[in-house]
Image (cartoon, rainbow, N blue to C red; front, side, top):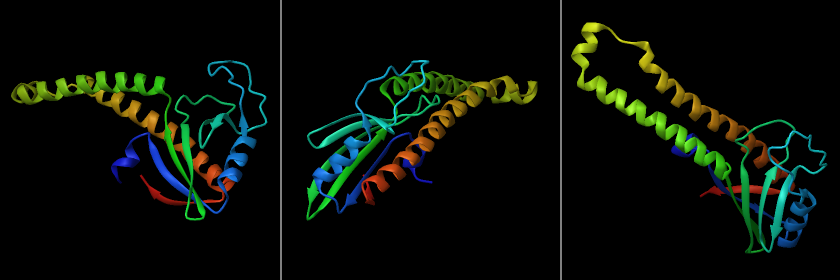
Length: 177
């Protein structure tokens, strides 16, 4: 397992035989430009699979889903012609709100875990005499739960978007950045 597999960020390049204009046309045909409220309880009636915008040779899109997943990737891309082919550089990340919230959660809980570890090392003799308290594992479980929550929520959705974009743009993944 590489380090990139444990973080909710992805960056890769698709290479397509389609022209830059054809790539932009295909993306725009699958975009709903309307900005619907993200925290709405009204079911989204869009027939398009993504919402967002495309301008010049870049785009920013997010998948339209009919269920809740706060870790849905925000997808940004740049389209460039290169040696008779088109390269689409794609970056996926969670929304800024989720990044800030999960950073605070994991940072605070991680700090508590660190204090527990340091305290355990400093008082190892007392712990062996008095016995181990399983209540001390709660922050570690909370940290693991938060990490897995964002990782699996993000990766499951990014996989769907990668497959869709690869098929739509007739692209081959050339390399990770």
